[in-house]
Length: 97
Image (cartoon, rainbow, N blue to C red):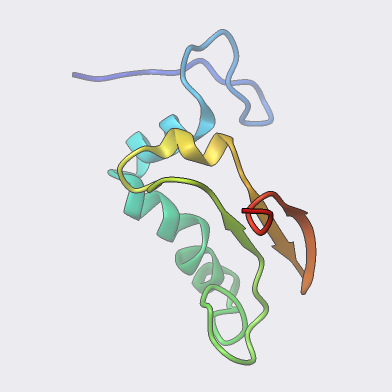
């Protein structure tokens, strides 16, 4: 079955019941592949794989946390509970537990 999504010039979905995450997962072939495209593969494409795209000492790391497994349910990415960007926490709805 082939799906198509009408898109705007900036890549935003228009008049579609599908989220951008859904489109990315379908386009990339799965949730793991979509995650790698957004992180590991993007770092390699930019020539930055020596400093981004991994959670390792010495790497720049922006991090989000969600409840659930985005590899089995991509919609959990629509409810981000924790955001770390450039070493600063911008949202933390997890530590109050």
